[in-house]
Amino acid sequence: MLPFERDQAMSFGIGIKSFKFFLLKYFHSKTFLKSNGLIFLTNYAFKKVINEIPILKDKSIIISHGINDRFFIYPRTAKPFFYPNDRCKIIYVSKSDPYKHHINVIKAIQLLNEKKYMVELVLIGPKGASALEVEKLLNQIDPTSLFIKNLGAISYEEINCFYKMADIAVFASSCENMPNILLESMASGLALASSNMGPMPEVLGDSASYFNPNNVEEIFTAIESLINSYDRRVELAMQSYLKAKLYSWNVCAENTFDYLNFVFENFKKKNND
View: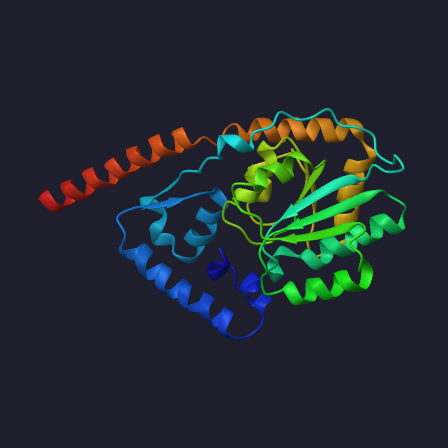
C-alpha cells in the first residue's frame, strides 16, 4: 500500500525509495485502469485505491488469502509472569523499515524493563532501511542482548517454531495491505498487541490490544495490559485464533476462480456485443 499512502512512503525520506513509490503508483494505476477486474485483499486496500481511482469500484472484488496450516497452534494456557528466571517472551516479526516502527517498539520494551517487568523481545526479519538505526539503539540500551534479541532473517520454514516459543506477538506496522505476519501470529495462538493503523483493526476486530505505532507510551501500555491480565491474554489469544481460522486457502482459491470465470464471461459478452 506504500504507493497509495504518501505519508507512509515519505517515512523513507526524499530519495530513490520515495521516487520509486511515486512511479509504482503511476504504473499500478495505469494497469488497474486497463484491467477487466481487480482483486483486493482487504476492504481497507479497496477503499484506499478506490478513493484515488473511483472508476475501479464496479470491477473490483475483495478476496482475502489464507494461512499455511502449520502455523495453527491452539492457544496455550497463559501463565503468570515475574518468575525470577521466566521472562515474558514477546515476538515481533518484520523487516526493519521505517513504517514498521522497530525503534518505538524497542523503546517500549526498554521502558517495560525499567518498570521491572520481566520481558524479552525477539526481533525477527531481514534488514531494512532502519537497520542501522535499530542496531545503534540496541547497542546503546542492551549491548549484551539481555532482554532484546535481534535474530535477523529466519527462513519461512522455521519461523513457526519461534511463534511457538512466544507468549505475546507485537505488530507495529502503520502501512499494510493484508500482512501474512499478522495472520500467522493470530493462527499461532498468541495474544496480540497491534498497531491501530492500516487494515489491522479490520483483520483483528476486537481481538487485540491496540496502540498508535508512533507513540512509545501507547505501545508500552498495550503490552503492559497483556502482561498484567491473565484473563485478557487468554481471551484475546482465543479470539484471534478463531478469526485466523476464517482465512482459508481453499476458500480463497474457490472465490478467486469463480471471480476469474465471472470476469472472463463478461469479457466475452462485451466482445460479442
